Length: 108
Length: 113
Image 1 (cartoon, rainbow over the protein chains, first blue to last red):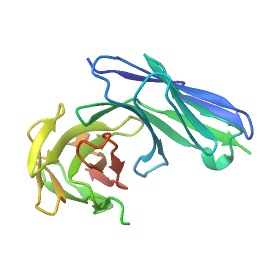
Image 2: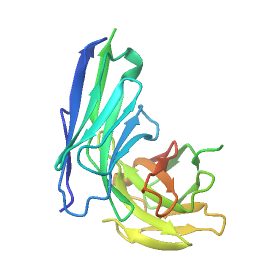
Image 3: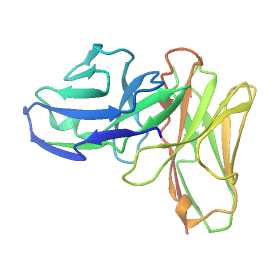
Image 4: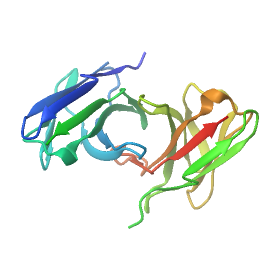
């Protein structure tokens, strides 16, 4: 059964305090690992796609990495505007299977 | 460049009624997928349309149906609404075969009373 597991469920950080979010998945048929940011009541905003182990991508204070069985979203020196729910999803045949997300709160 | 648009933004329906939600894909995209997101959960895949045909379907009953038009826009129809159908309905568009990246619209918040 397709499964994507994200941890932690919620994370509170002080402004400037770096941390990482985890996404683990079943491997067979992986056709991409996707990260999205979602603000309350809005649609997910595309951040990154990773396709092969060892791949890394960066955008501002965010860096996504991929191993054979998990992905990490590293956030460096976060600001309050980085507060959101971060979703990861695996893709197979253009269908995305999502985890339940990590709710990130950055305290000023 | 217009992104994915959805209408309406909010909708309140009564149990047993029918509802139609609409989606226009991002310019250059030809594939539309629909997702249901319950509060506190990740989006769940409903189905996907390409070339005006349903190509894949998730674990949703046939009360959920859809359509894609020649201009790639799409509709999601839900019949015989249940209280449990209350959710945020998300439309995502992509260009088939291009790295599977899906871009989401703002969603339609459906409340069934």
